[in-house]
Length: 324
Ligand SMILES: Nc1ncnc2c1ncn2[C@@H]1O[C@H](COP(=O)(O)OP(=O)(O)OP(=O)(O)O)[C@@H](O)[C@H]1O
Ligand SMILES: [Mg+2]
Image 1 (cartoon, rainbow, N blue to C red):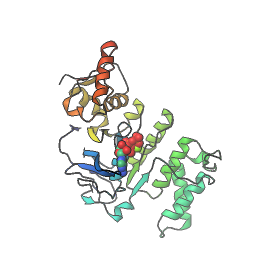
Image 2 (cartoon, rainbow, N blue to C red):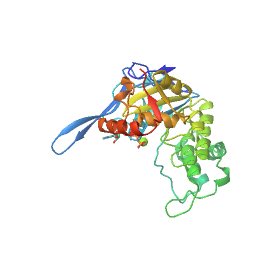
Image 3 (cartoon, rainbow, N blue to C red):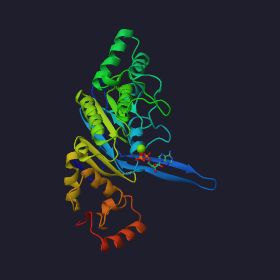
Image 4 (cartoon, rainbow, N blue to C red):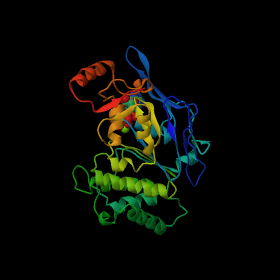
């Protein structure tokens, strides 16, 4: 399903186990009011975002730094109440509710874990504190162990988490503990903010494989992602590409390159599709004839375009966008 920017579409997030559907009609928008000493101005953070995701799917939110990934993820996860985002967001036709809150897991970019607890203690305490009272202590402890095996953390279960002053688990293991902290309550919707940032491509791939396993168990997974490798990129079912808070692409991740080549944007050399799209969203194109509908959405100002034009005349083009 190819979604061309600027068109009105429904954004639907479906999830198993409860009634949920995320829908934006009109599209999701988000503005903040910036109060200065002398003046007050409005700033558009997100503009016209649409899309859909179903149980069993992993949706990736991609875009340059400052393009609005975390803001969109927070809005979809029901974490932004003030100022109220525009557009409508529904989960299986229902608006956000308190009941839904208990079905959502949200892994933030900056994790907060106790450095002196071991992996097993961290997840056991999470289970004891967050699972319902109807379960016995033994059942909760068993759930913590199940999560440890599910995330492949058995080898480091007795290692301390660690921090600035105490050596502890590796970065990848730490991320998996954070994911464990959320999946322990078996959420239907799992949101993650940059779960692979700072990790090598093999560890990142392992985390995305874990997310896939979670999705295959009938959950809906939405994650922001930063510079994925091409192998990792192809693992996503759906993709939202943001540029300056606007939608550049929504659809199947595997069809994104076909869409961009259909509007005249193709890399001149074989390159990682994610790298190509981030270059495009950053305005890092050596041919300035970006399709008019994308021009306002890529993060390139006019002075930069002029510089690029000059640089382009003397060096070879890396990405070519044009022909429309
Ligand atoms: N409450 C706010 N007030 C003012 N500006 C804001 C607010 N929230 C977000 N922004 C701005 O909105 C833009 C998008 O922020 P956001 O954190 O969503 O970006 P991002 O795509 O997650 O970036 P990164 O990859 O660096 O994490 C940024 O320019 C940020 O400064
Ligand atoms: Mg962010």
